[in-house]
Length: 170
Image 1 (cartoon, rainbow, N blue to C red):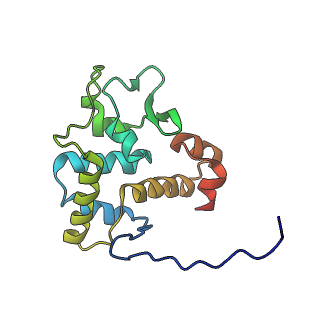
Image 2 (tube, one colour):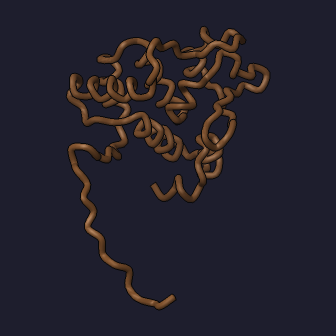
């Protein structure tokens, strides 16, 4: 294979169709947006912010996911199952729903739950007058909070299901 420079390509990306949102919200921004959300979506946002879970992991959370003896909540996502340490704040948030059954923790009556949550967060941000953030922005916020609290990067990565190098890169 000859060694030569790669060609330069002009990409035609329609900014109306593809908009990257990499805003990591502050706790104050999340609090303001929460006041504008329906209760179940607000609970989802709080769960995402508290755990750094991916949206699919939060939606898939079952009521029997708590191991009370170990104090761990089992999240199951794209990198496989992982345990999240249960705090008093997390228990106060969803503890009453962790009744040991196989029912979902979060109750939604729509098919495209993830899309609806994203739309509702976007609208809530606009109503609250805060920069728009996404469920993944809440994940970045949780990682940032762990780093600022002095959690070892390898521990934070195992809790959130990140590769440590990728997590530190962002």
